[in-house]
Image (cartoon, rainbow, N blue to C red; front, side):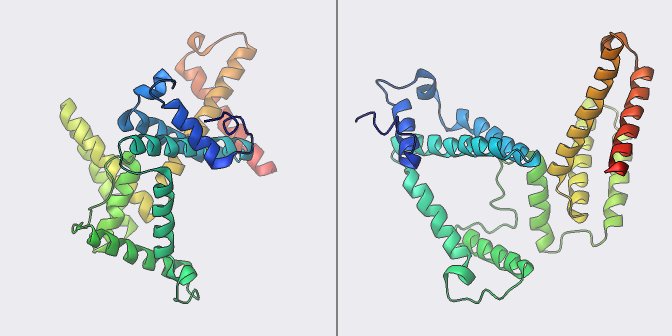
Length: 272
């Protein structure tokens, strides 16, 4: 095949698919790409999804364009490997998603009225997905919650599924009580394995608390990571002004600088 498409800056999806095919060519492809399989590429796929979320969090729209491209390339990579095994190709991936979206939006693409609230649409969406799971012979309430999801996200999804059939605390205070109970059990754990189990229980309940408070726990943790990074960088900058590094400081001094960073953030917010 001519290289015209490969080097066409306006080649769109056909260009990207052809580039991927060439990278996996057994005779002339890239050795690294040829060594990969679904399992080895999956971690990159997850990483790219998080980098998309990071660009959105920072409102860096130019970087978002690039990150979306990286994520799209992951789909193309998986589809190429599937095509080589005779499983499916990229067009079938796109058609499957199109069919799913049409089926799940009868109020847009079918005869149903679209005069419904977002909440009602969410309920309808869940019913349609439940029907799809039934068609796949997934009978259990928790069937279909992917094992490969990040643990925090999977915890929330499992809890949402259980809540649909009434397995849920009706009040947030009851979840807070459970948090306190799990914290006490962690305090009392005496061996590493017991600590491991109790720590997992505490994280699971914290995910449940986030759900009851309508908080995205992943977004909340990303925000906390960002806050920690900003404040620690403040500590480093203040020490650097004195010609020192954190290794040349101590906890008491760095803790005081941490409090100064908090005060500086609070003053900035009050003036904005």
